[in-house]
Length: 464
Figure 1 (spheres, helix red, strand yellow):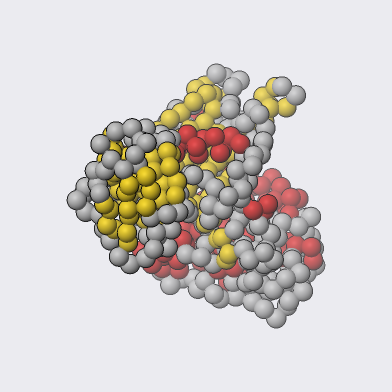
Figure 2 (figure 1 turned 90 degrees about the vertical axis):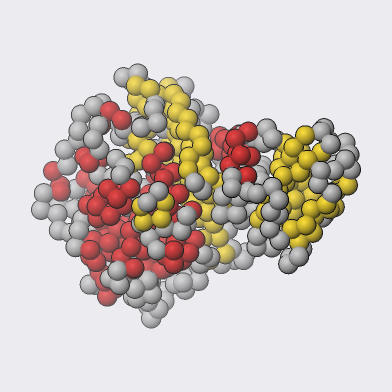
């Protein structure tokens, strides 16, 4: 990697924060815990938080036709009678996709003066309009991940709040969290803390984005911009610049149902809505991106831990969060609501390229990092935080301590899976049976992650 950061956290805070490599190769600037990265598609979760805040204020209805919000008709030409809603945009089921004109429209949104109106790509007769901007499927039923959904959402934030998208997020997410992060690079207090994004091309690192060389950029096309016409100017689909540490704190808010460390961004109901299932792959109801996308919430990728498809932490039966990739950067932010653990991984250039593997659709570099987190010694302490040794929840474990057979019984649901780790975090046994033999194990303490259908229990086991 050129450089990057890894943050590991449990529900009550960060337990590890690591930075490596260079944030700016040309000027020899090292990455630090305060280095900001353009987070790519993890930014979509930040945009979703903004949307849910407006829903809480009764300024927005997730199930209303977006045409009534934007002020012009947006409809799938293949299914013109079915409204497209904000909920569909959040869950990528709107049938609006990144068609052949999207790239040109996005470039014009960032660079042109004046900035084109969003209607120019969504309405018949628009400069960038194409029927290929829509799937030939029914809105609300078919999943197709697309960036333009969040360009539209950023514009909806502007229409409803009467604030520019970058200003709204700064005032209602970044500032309340006390973090130096923004969708507008000019908001950052120190431009030298922003990582340059790189790709390695023919053996040489080449800058791809955010290569400002210590000079704040000037954006003349913001002069005269009319709020609510095209939030895509600020990158709601991928342009949030933030440190890994500060992003972890935002995801800790979601993990803790809206409030963390005295800061409330959302209600518990809004968090639950974001994390709940909106779409699950059934074999033909969407583009699952080679198996990576198998379930989706509202701005949240729901990992199902299906072997060969979407496994992140090997010890987690499911995870919630988002992944990102752009301009050479790879980023991930996920947490497990049962094990109460999570992580943020971000880098600003992968030297080996986007290599794949057989374990999952995540890139090899991601999978290696995920495995390292799973084997991390302090993760066991995170899982056991606040656990009373005498309190086994709804489980009966006997005998414990043991020198041979161990049985685990749930008084409510059958045991689905047991994973046993030593206290260095190494997986030493995995079983779908509720009874197993401990006789060949070395004496000492072990952590057992016990999964039922909808619950998780971390248990201490002792071999003597």
